[in-house]
Length: 423
Ligand SMILES: *Cc1c(COP(=O)(O)O)cnc(C)c1O
Image 1 (cartoon, protein in one colour):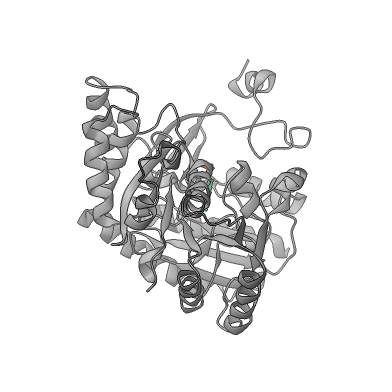
Image 2 (tube, rainbow, N blue to C red):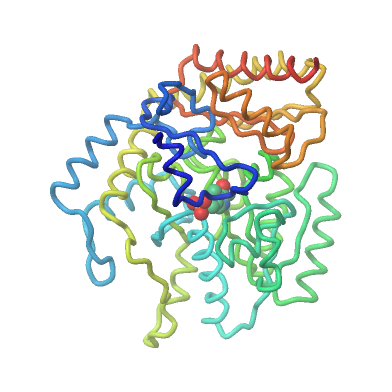
């Protein structure tokens, strides 16, 4: 039996309707930007396995550092004990985060990093004897699949069945350059009528909303309003973090820095799962007390796993290197040239780009997980490129180590797919 056949016996895949999509492609090897399946077919990983392995798969620098670490210290409780990998990572990460970020709290994935951010914000007010229970979030946001994260997300295909159990959330549109006054008056209304605890948002690029991009000045105005009202600002940089927008973090494009930042995905360079929620000194200080119940009683068994910390530290070293920074610049200008070319195609409604994130919208309406979208996905796979269209949006978010030849192959495959659609 093939792996593909054995898979079907016991495995339940994420974000999958198994009656319609019973089969998965079995990947047996990954190296650099290439995935290889059990039949020997290869695919360019044009979305960096959900934007995680930005320095390439099985990057030898990262794997050797982790291999070395696992000979010395594998896993240890992170309550009352600490270790060098976490300490070194904290120093390296605080160094590149926005200046106001001072403390790091560990968890295991993007959803839990948001969950922790929401809980920090709620307990911050609780500790100050203020009752605040309402959150503000963007329309079309996505923040993960745990309950707090689902509450602030708005894509109903993911969270529809659970909506009766959510935290109360008020939604505002993303700033587009024309609607700033409207958003601010909506915010004023919400904060006058509710006890608003926090604003949770994906800064500048909303990943799961099909790489939707919004206006930086507009976001800055929202953050400024929140600061005035002591509404805690929680930036979900799970997707945007670690260089993808052209700066180390999307928040660094803005004047106002968030109180809390959520990190995962590329944090560990795609090698191991881990997440971090960072916060400013004033958030942390609100949990200091002689009363133990004012502490933050949240904890995951694998918090600050030394191997994951080592992968993250090695990843940050690569991110800061000239080699990776030059790659980022090269990809940005390469995408720009492709954008100029492809936006004239009859099937393209619009293009957008921020840093190494490139997206194009087709002028054909497609359901998020509909038939036409499935045909596109199959066309890409048949042509050796792993791209997952989000509805009628095709986006590229490839590892920083992608070569020019691999980029050309992604571009020409997208163009061939568009030509195919027109016939
Ligand atoms: C992927 C993602 C999450 C959820 O992360 P998981 O590791 O899948 O739980 C949260 N927020 C954003 C912006 C994401 O892209």
